[in-house]
Length: 328
Image 1 (spheres, rainbow, N blue to C red):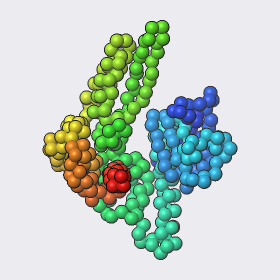
Image 2 (image 1 turned 45 degrees about the vertical axis):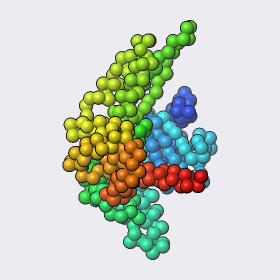
Image 3 (image 1 turned 180 degrees about the horizontal axis):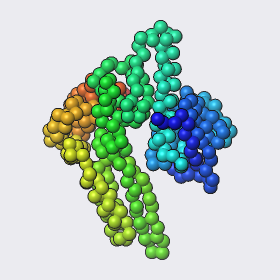
């Protein structure tokens, strides 16, 4: 069983770079995270994010911080940490597990005070153990866990976990997403060097990035092996059933939604009406200038998973775009 306390080391992060020479001590309990002796209650944390060894906390407005931590607050809301001794993702899961339970109970108490306790509804994600508050959403076939990104059902069966398949940072489509390190070498007369980036992208976007890196590094040789490795990694090791998902997404991004829909419909035989695949279909129709088809697929994704926030956010963006167009 996961321990109640997690101890870790950390450095604050500014401009995506860890600052300072010596790491400070931190710990996470079942009610708060402590940074060098300064306590932040989970009730004041509204969101968390992790990538590699980086861990980001988003805090509620007005959160009272200790003097050392307050100096590191970014945009009046975020604290970014470079974590060691434990994995940043494990720390995120710990904070989400206990924090989500506190947030859900706070909402239940609010509804109770308003005489609406019967409207409260929640479940525990079987993948990350976070409490998902689905109050106010219709009961649908699937439930989206906003903490880990997994798709589950009310029988607590994991339909698809987010360890591999999730939303791509670049194209915002549902696919296999992994981390890639991109090296770019340069040589300009007497000046030479290299740059390193970490990107979390789907197979299609990784292939495009690998092709670009190969062209950039072709003259300097040193970066070529890294680009080739990235290309091969993006093309191999897929689950057999999802072998054609990248192809469908590639067609969808080109607006060839009819060909893409044929592949998505085949994938539905194993994952009936999967909300991520329905969102991809909607994006394909959107790229193909078929607005009605796009809205139809996105709406259907919410009929099967009422709290599927990737589709909710996309529909909001479309509505805002339409609203802004109407005002002009």
